[in-house]
Image (cartoon, rainbow, N blue to C red; front, side):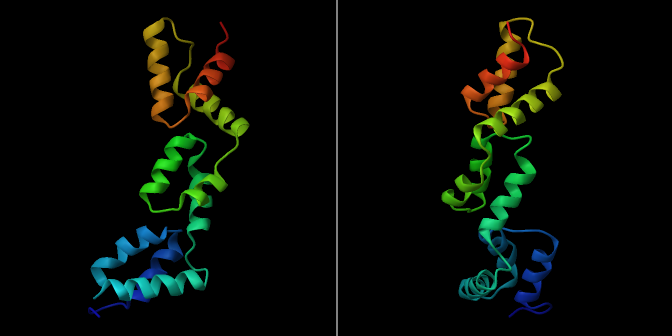
Length: 147
């Protein structure tokens, strides 16, 4: 093992500050470990003791980010962090909550209804970039600015 803190102490220091996915924690610890097996055994121990949990991480991440991002963006970000798709789907907001979030994002970003087709397309692109599905975007636009 390299000099300084033990690998377990580093992992616990990180987890004491916030939740990490297993993959994130593995990436953070990799420069300080002598082998991948050492990291894998530590991660298994942390998971067995419930000190690290991808389920808890997904729940916390979605709770903190779902007000400004849609389902698609949340799924993409969590997949990049190595969280299993079934854990992500189990914690995603329902359609009504996502519509309310989309309305809040739309209202915060755009103070007035679109004046022309190009402006409407700009609003749609922004909402799609945020990860909201097209049906949610259209429903939010229709509800916020009925025509």
